[in-house]
Each structure stands twice: as C-alpha cells, then as structure tokens.
Image (cartoon, rainbow, N blue to C red; front, side, top):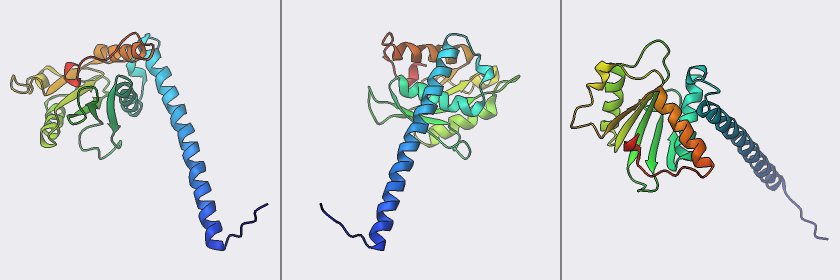
Length: 189
C-alpha cells in the first residue's frame, strides 16, 4: 500500500486537527443533550408538570432562547453576565432577517421588576436601534413600570408574565408536533 511519512510538524497538525474534531463531536453531543433537556423541561412546563418558579434563572434564559428558536425565530443567547441589558437577541426569519428584537428575562420570586429595570431595558433597546423589546418576567411587571410604555412606544415594548410564558411553552410543544405554526412577529407577544 501507500506509505506516507509525516514529519513532526505534520504529526502535530494531524493530532491537533483530530483533537479539534473530537471536541466538536463532543460539543455537538453536549449541545444535543442540553437541547433534549430543555425540550423536556418546556414540555413539563406546558403541561403544568413543573412551575416556572421551580426553574433557575439561568436555565430560564436558555429555555426561552430555545423556545424562540423553536417558534421560527433566529435567536442569539447573550452571556450570563455583562449582557448589556438583554438576555436574548431575536429576529423573525419568516418576515425578514434585519429587525432584531431585544429580549430580557427576569425571574424574581416575591417581587416584580419596576421602573428602573424596565427603563434600563427600554433604554438599551432604543440605544441599540432594535425593532422592539420583549420583557419577560415570571412574576409580571409592577404597574408603575407599565407606565414607561407610552402610546408612542407601545409597539416597541411588550411585556409577558407567568401565564404568557407558560403559553409560550405550550406553543413550542404544539409547533414541535406540527399543530401550531408561528404567524406573527415578536411584536405580537
């Protein structure tokens, strides 16, 4: 057969490439396991087997990132810290691939985000030139914070509380089974 001689640099390059390919396969398996776990968690929330309050905040960020992707949006999960005031960036790929929305997810027990949190998020959304913002909060939003959304900016800033978040989980499950298809932009939430 063919004999191929490899010098030290060639061997080092071959080993490095093989190692990188192995890491990518493992990462792909790890991602598949995490996505499987998220899908099971979403299904449990949709079927009232698990309450949103039982889920950790950092898992909720991944969970709603997965939901947005599953509902037909292009979504990017921002780093857990230093995210610039938004947890997910998303755009509706069915309508266009240009108008990105900021999504903030708050998971507070015993209190609701107020003017400061909503105002900061809204400022970030406007400063970055996003098409709008979706503020998700498992505990809802304080009434005082809702007043920040004036008639002028009503379409740019949407809120969703616990019941709507559970409903998003139900839509995700329905979309996966082919029963529900997304038909509205992120502004509709």
